Image (cartoon, rainbow, N blue to C red; front, top):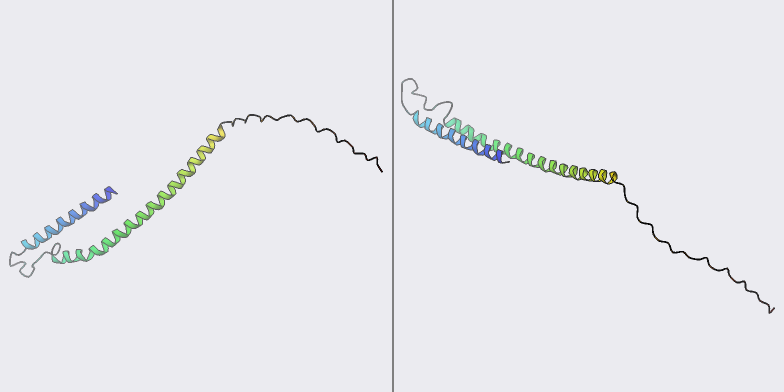
Length: 128
């Protein structure tokens, strides 16, 4: 983004220099001669050029703003996709590493020996 800012500032400085040269050229063309007595200013740089540039500045600024907004949105979407991709890559690498090492078996759980229950004593009723 810093390179874009430098380019924008350089363009603005060049545009100001062109405007200054155009104003200086229009001031210098006030010399009367027989060849261009009816021509008061140059066709390339002069009042008409400045008027055309001033009319073109608003659409140009709008286009630059739209392009900047679209590039910002594209950057946000790309960064989101990059974040998801990095998360998936980390998960995949950790899964590969986890599968490459054998998992240690847990120690056996000690089981207490329990004797079988005694057989039930049959109940016999003799008083019938």
